[in-house]
Length: 333
Image 1 (cartoon, rainbow, N blue to C red):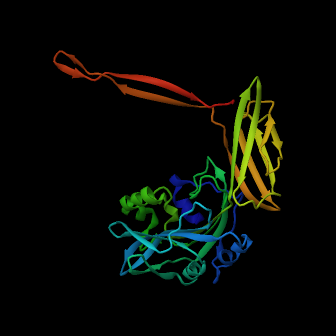
Image 2: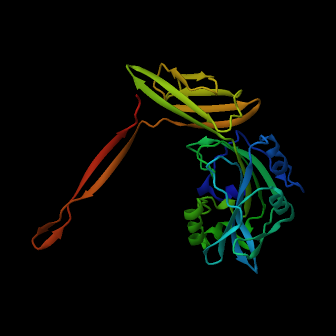
């Protein structure tokens, strides 16, 4: 995977795992997928939300990209119980299903292929070639360009891929250009951008999100400035988790670190103008949440407005006017 990243300097990806992690040879079995679900409360049912993006080839389907998300079901969640098949365009197909067991995926990774029965009664064989795997974590980072199916969850990810630099006999650097139209349709329907992240072609990934949603905001009133922190523990699992919030100003010469409790909303005064914030939450020694980004001060918009047309010397002239609008962030209640 790292060799692939070097081939795509225009698609530089920032790692979120605080350091380089060695690539490990894929094990014959898949203990991470099989065992990690044991930490989930037995009362909470999980499904494995799985999608295969495939290219039809010689009567079967080659995996272009795929992933599964271990998703704990809430009262409003829907469920796709039977494999669905979508012919995106030409020979590009998408299969998706919410699996109730990890066994199918474990066999898929171990054997390199799986047969699935779709809702229309047809059977399809999906094959996948890989020889290495790696693990990392994805934080909530406004500056990161790493592909993450979630915007607000800290996520553990494991990827399986081949160290080869071609896919179906075509260099990966050319494959996504040859299938640019089909991949754009995949992104439009499923939010997976392989044109933006071509190094993921030929990859299967497993995502495990931590079901914590945190919000941090900056406020000002009566000459005082403070930060408000709120966190939602969706399944009430992490009541004893430790929280650390780090805030600094633009130059970095003023900063403050606080450690509130997870279970309650928290406000704290800051004696300087804040610019950047980082939130880290740990459960025991394990990181379960990490986000960092800058506070939005305002958004500048330039609008070109077309007005009524003028007729000058027999010619019609368009009249336009330009307006600049500044939308300032709300900093007080």
